[in-house]
Amino acid sequence: MARVLLDSVDSTNAHAARLAPARPTWIMAAEQTGGRGRRGRPWSSPRGNFYATLALQPVEPAEQVALRSFAAALALRDACVAVTGFATGFQLKWPNDVLLNGGKLAGILLESSGVGQGISQLSIGIGVNLIAAPTPDQVETGAVTPVSLLAETGLRISPESFLTSLAVAYDRWESEFVNNGFAPLRAEWLAHAARLGEVITARTGTRSESGVFETIDAAGALVLKTPHARRAIPAAEIFF
Image (cartoon, rainbow, N blue to C red; front, side, top):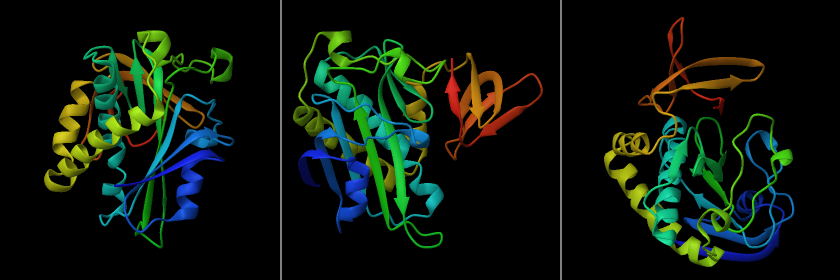
């Protein structure tokens, strides 16, 4: 895959939309001046952390394209294991976060563009707290506490080194997804899922619902067993 390396940019996802590359391309920046996470929340972007977007040109229906968030999460975890040599401590929080020792290490933001039901470009934005993490007062009340790779492991990994490992890992999971579908990704994701079998809270807008995190279904939705019913939730914020 091609690579575009930038010193400073508003956000790598925004740059990917402007660039609209004709082939799969990684776009990485040393600094973001307008980084954002889910629901438009600002993403703290000091130098030394990792900010990159993978721009893809998918051919599948929109609902299948969205499942690449799981490919990205698995690749992100694999990259963390590769650069640290630590096989334990990294877990996956539905839908798009990677945890280290229970704290939020990384996040993923998918954005797409296209006409009608077709998606012409998918941007998979990835942010990793390599050397610094936001303070608790910078995140939503009740959210998982952010952590950095440096503070948790004592290892200082450069963004360039991390991109190399991440690109290799993503190629593997992209190939798995294209050739074998979502099933193998689902199985591997569940093997590393945080709080599986435990009570969690799913918040959708102003509504919150608590229940046992049973699994994710074939569409990637969270399956929650509540006192009243077994529910498949396609999108929500999760709180522990």
